[in-house]
Image 1 (tube, rainbow, N blue to C red):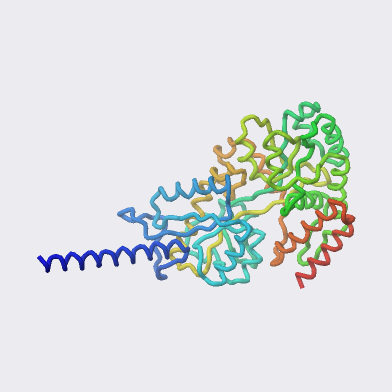
Image 2 (image 1 turned 90 degrees about the horizontal axis):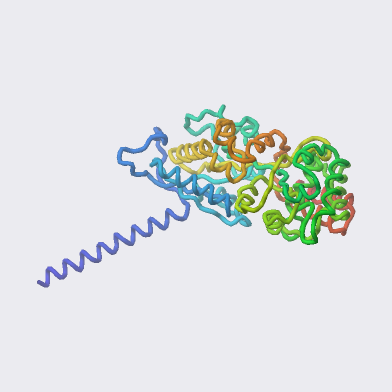
Length: 440
């Protein structure tokens, strides 16, 4: 009897040790670190094993929150339901520190297997030398299915550093009920192709709004004034100007100064109220309290959740010259530190998501694959066919390693002029000086 008790005690201890090892392995996998050895003949990730048991799990980092996260999570879940060789764990990271985390992961060569990065951020990530050349990963992707301008945007010196996911651009949302009060229609907005016509529309709207309503809804206050910066950018590029020309700052030239003067003039005439922060801007339009809202296509899904909001959306008219707008792209990056078979799995996953991106389009983004944007399913979505046209109107930022730091400076000083602490020329001259200093 005593021997049996000793044997049972030993067996219990052994099982406890095994369980502990198993938990440690699970925890290690949850850190986002990758494991596995590189093989010369990597398995085709388009095939599933006979037992439908996945070989492992890819860790996928995103900065998405709210509706964007829910749509992407839905697609990841659908992908995992296809029994791929590598399933995918989606991890939503805090936006404020997201790119710090990406940079840290690339430099330390330890982090996600695949991640979302903005096209405009690639120039900052490329110097880490840890972004994999996508075309060097074994794949059978038909790249002709992709929008070629978006492929060009992720290619630097003939190296493709990412897989495009979408284009998201600044557009114009409008409230049909408020337009009707002013005897205006969407066609009137679309035909406002000069500043005089545009200001006539704003003049017609001003008398019909109540004290708690807005003619123009553009975020212009708080810690995040980037939407005001984008509105300035749209007005500047429509007038033939811009922000940066390579490493040369041109935002303080005549088109940039006049664009900022226009924003200030809208405020002084009562079209645009000051003190609207980023979060409040979305809430104002969603609650039916604004006639016109300049923001990104991603707001569509949010606004559609209010069944009482009678709204429409269109490309921003050519109110200051040519019909141009601001835009950027989400892309998939794959680190070089990930081993070959997992890289193939990550690339297959990214292409699968792009092939099923009608779901992503519901968030308002314009998918990267022409086979999606030309599909009947996509074209039947409200507003989205118009968004596909916006892609050709986008004036992307130039590729610059210091771009996002320059954006912060530009947005801050544009707002400084907007609130009246500087003239437009003074603010943009100072922005040029500070941006050139960080680029030296």
